[in-house]
Length: 303
Image 1 (cartoon, rainbow, N blue to C red):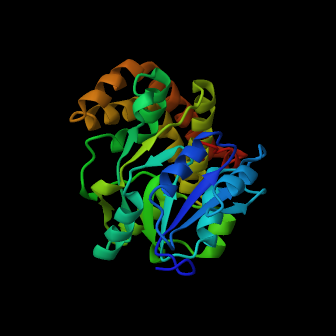
Image 2 (cartoon, one colour):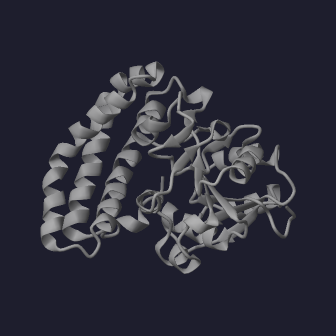
C-alpha cells in the first residue's frame, strides 16, 4: 500500500453538506494510514470544496458541477477512485477509530465482494424526534444490535466494494451509483453481503422534516423508474397498483424488524406519525415513477 497504489479509496458525495463534512473528515484524518485515498466528489455552491482543500489537503476534491444528486456524485467519485477496494461514506458519517484498518483487513481476509456494517445515531442526536424519525426511515435495519456475518442488506453510506463488484467507470459516470440495484444484481449472481462489526458508523444528519419529506418522494420516484425501466406498460401498471398499500406494509415490516432492538423500537412508536408521512411520500413517488418515469427526481436526491 502506497500513496500511488492505495488499498482503499473512500468516496464521499458532497452537495452543500454544511459543517458536518469537516467532522467526517476529521474522524478519518485521526486514523489515516499512508496510501488510503479519500475522494470528495463535490457539487456544492457554498465554497465547501475550497474549505476542504485548505483544511484537509490530503483529501482529493473532485469538482463535479453537473452532478446534482448523491447517486451521480457517488458514481463520479467511484469512477475516479484508484484503489482495488472502494468504500462509500456520507458527509454526515462519523467513523470509529479503527474503521479504515478494519475495512482493509476485512477485504484482505474475506472473499466477499461487498462488506459493510451498522449505522447508529450519534450520541448527541439520540434525544431528538427529528433525528430518530429520519434515522428510522432510512437505517432501521442497521440499528444496534446489527448482526455480523452474512446479511440480506447493507446500508448505502457504510459499505465497501471490491472493484470487481462495481459497474464499469463509464456507467458510473453516466448513470451514477445505485446501491440497491448493484447489490440486487450481486445477490442474484450468488454473491453474499457481509457485515463486519468493526465498520459501524455514527451519523449526525440534521435535515428539516419538511425537506426530508420532499426528498423521499424523489427517492421513491427514481427507484421505481429504474426498477421498471424499459418494462411493458402492463408490468408498470401492476407495480403501480400496489403502491397505495406500501406505507402500511413498510410500517409493519419495520415494527417486526425492530423486535430485538428495544431502544429503536421505542422511538419507532413515538415516530409513527412522521414515518407514515415519509412512507406516503415515498409511495407517491413510486407511483409517479412507474407511470411517468423519473421526471426530475434523478437530480433531486440530495440526502
